[in-house]
Amino acid sequence: NYLREHNQIIYVISNNPRSPKIADMLGISSYFKGFFIPDQANGVHPKPHHSFWDYVLSVDSEITIHEACMVGDDPWSDGQFAENCGLNCWIVDRGLRYHSLRNEKTYRWVQSLLDIQIT
Image: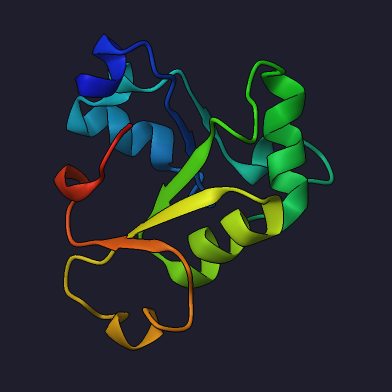
């Protein structure tokens, strides 16, 4: 709600083609402006490939790299995607499974979405 109240746009960028349906089932679809999955466009490769970001930018030209950030739970897919695209990145590591990577990667590491500091 905080992001919506502050006119922040949220997209889901997922390799999972079922993500829109899952969001509907969870009752959270209204939080997102849209969903991007690689199957939507020819020639788009899944995260972490940069072509996925190029596709997102081609659909919404108002997105700027300086205002966008990636929030994910997988350093190899989401984190590497952010690196490939020049995005700031938050990795939500609920179970501290990736603790050993924290010194190797410059992502912002949190245990909950509530821990993300929005400025």
